Image 1 (cartoon, rainbow, N blue to C red):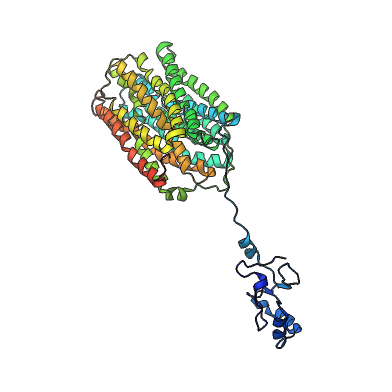
Image 2: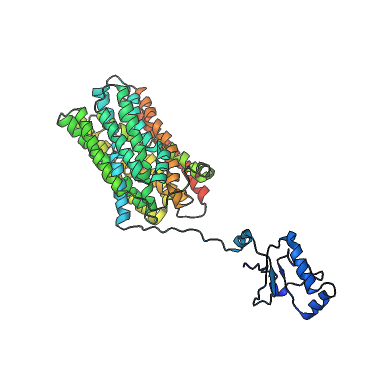
Length: 498
């Protein structure tokens, strides 16, 4: 039998009304002293009291219980409703979650994510070799911006399918989206190996592969966030360094097969497809999540768009992605413009991607230990924008190699720093995947338009004057620092390390 207690008026201090009616809505009657009982007995006998109590059901009396308590309550009437009992229960403490920040399982997830980015975005970062080869051999007569749409759709797909990938990740775990991703990546690569026309490449190497890249991008990006907190930027940087690894392997492999061994485009792409299949299958076995899956089958879009700091951050990153990948697509034709051979120019993306690994690693450490993720992101955006403008006077092989190293270092850091910031803004660990997925889907529209815009600027100057494209790249990157700074202030104006 539940007992209703009042903190402000304890039961031993509750007065008995002279009329004999029940105190506090009919929950209890207490006989305090013999004087109170004598005063009441002049009007009602104890039998009358019992009769009155049985008639007071309209006031909420559902049961009568005689029980003695240590507080001198001789009689308690009624039973507290379940709602009353729930109101008296203390509030449950907020659920907290610990992060391993290391160990075999945690680091194996990072390795698996690295493999995904090697087969996916690392391959996209190598599109500069296809941009050059297609314009000279396969798709002669097509403009630079038309060819750039193939790689741009790939890049858009890697980010743009974040929402369906996030839903699959929440409902079924990482295995389903990763295996589906492996199928579409390999199928798209194999179909592009037998393509002969522009629209063939657009559908196979562009759209089909893009869907595969997108299904694996969000799981690979979100998984390390669930295993690391103190070393989150470092873990993310190492995972995303797969783009560096792929950016080294694929251009060298493609260059060797196409320009040295005379294998031809068909078997070059088939070789790439078989390697992508093996890499993705190993990655699917290694990546796992540790946060309980969300019961809701929908995305918290309303909650996401009500968080102003996240919305402004996504806008700033969209502006950034309108220019960030332009050098990765055009460094090879630009080097050939200034005298580099086709064999030598194919190595420039490898140089840029190789150095980007160190940028992700060292900037990740700085973000985790010293400056914070937000501050490091803003600082690196400004540095990258300045370096982009320094591309303009690079007119020889030595200058292009030095510039590629600097741009690769800092642009590589940008590709890994925005994810820890988005994870920081997620209301709970269970929503990290959704927050990252929605964010990268919006960012994708910047990636989609970046290469065609740059190609149009290049085509308008007969493919020889790269200055307008280089100015566009630098200005867009520098402009993105403003909304990212606003997002940081909206999130927290007082913390120095954030």
